[in-house]
Length: 177
Ligand code: HEC
Image: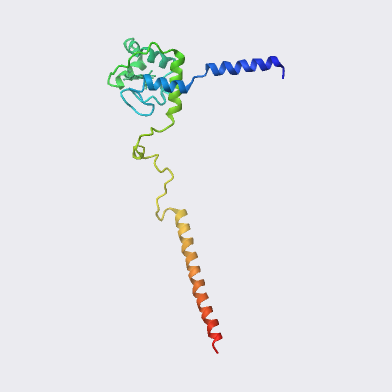
């Protein structure tokens, strides 16, 4: 390949990796700055953040994290709705967080959103518990078929054993003069 193109490709790749949000850094930031009020999958003082990127635009989230109350006071409809839905508990401003750092946090939230909270008891998500469970009733067709087959096999085995016994007897009787 032409070395010029190779250089261009290399630049693109490194450029991309510099720009991409970093969920590992986001995790650290989240734990230090947000976890006292937020969990990704559970509501604490603040709402669960899973799926937040589908509820608001990225640009809105960045503005909100930096200064939510000024948005509420300015009458931003989405901010007001969130504020009222959370008993009008105000979230502190984070003016020192850059846009990229907030994107890192969002990347972590996205990554974490699929996972279930680890400390939850199984009955906290009853629908997810034993998703392939098939109760053993007569309506459970695979089980019934297996059961009937087993019974048939056992009957055949029994008949075979009885026949074997009588055959042995027969031979023994023959031996006796
Ligand atoms: C002192 C508690 C507290 C801290 C710390 C905190 N938040 Fe919040 N957050 C809240 C509360 C309460 C709300 C909802 C009420 C409101 O509008 O202020 C909220 C709302 C949000 C929302 C809107 C959620 C939605 O579903 O619409 C986002 C996004 C958010 N916080 C992100 C963050 C991030 C990122 C951090 C860390 C940098 C953080 N918060 C730190 C309390 C907090």
